[in-house]
Length: 58
Image 1: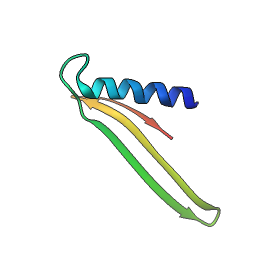
Image 2: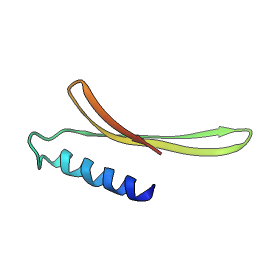
Image 3: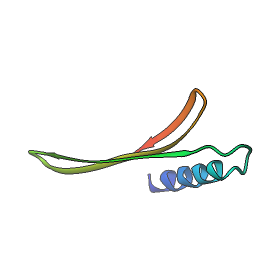
């Protein structure tokens, strides 16, 4: 799973810097939840270009 995350972050970075054309802005969402079973952290990274978006949650 970590390999996929690293590959996705690398692809997102290359896309965001404009290697393959016009740069797109990456997105990052993070959150922390507290419940009776403990504290949970989560988030997602991705890119959006027009009507298309690609997100990876963790």
